[in-house]
Image (cartoon, rainbow, N blue to C red; front, side, top):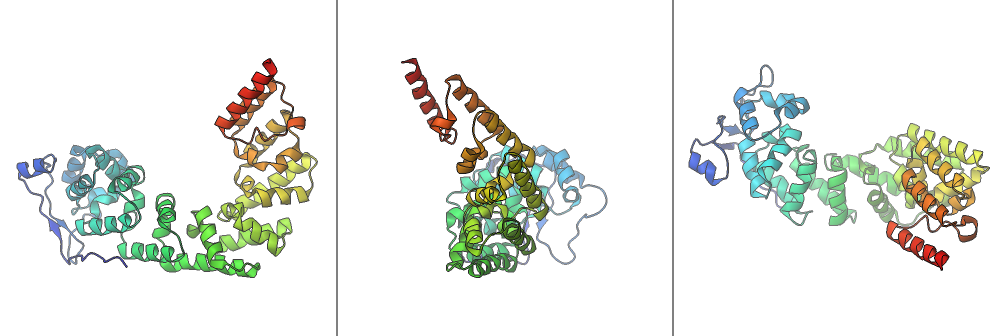
Length: 381
């Protein structure tokens, strides 16, 4: 376990009026020089009433967008005890530019309430996952709430250790922390409940590797740990019932792309499945075709009904048979614009989908262009 840094009972930063010292730290002399204190009984804070004018002036001098800060977390601007200078010094020591610091505070004003001890401790925990300080700085510039949202460093460390014990390595933890940071704000018990639900589900369906199953689900659906167990159970029950899935089919679905749909709201899932059923029925497909499609490519349930219908219409009108789409459903991952462009280019050279298949549509841009170039050249010859 990573050694935790000792947090003193009382910590303060005297905001020195020594201009030379501030210049040494590449900082402007600011008008607001209040002591920065850690929370303690009797500590006075301006939680209600007017804004702290000297604080607002300080932030404006630092380049902070005060209007944005006021809109996002107005209570921070009323506080008497803040640490904007200490925060700026800390972030700059990690490689953040002055403009980056201003942007971070603008987007997440509560960041100026964190003490130096807290910041050092939290940074050390993040560095147990990330390789460099610059990686963390880039994330803070893009999403400061992922770093500052929670102030509970002990809980963060416990979650890192728990998730690591599941076999999730630095790469997976990196993705979780940047994509679904609320995972690390959850209590370990809440995360454990979701993991145990996934493991129990695997066993109930006849799987013999519940730990690997849970790890696979988390790796494929980074948001799963911030979804309720009630929602996950409801979605599993709905898919089993509506598609008449056997234990083996359901296990296969969830172990594959089905992990992506477990976190949807159940109403969203119901609406999308109903739309798929209705659309494919209009194209002379049976419910068994829908079942096959979803087992092989569950992400179709993530696409909005209007968008999915547009893609199917575009392909069918472009000469692609619905059976070909069912056999290669990944084509539905492409945007409508992309599909239209490719169909138009293939139509120009008289491409026959019935004769040549649709693999050319389901390829990277580079491969598509190379194949198109070869086909064009052969026609010209």
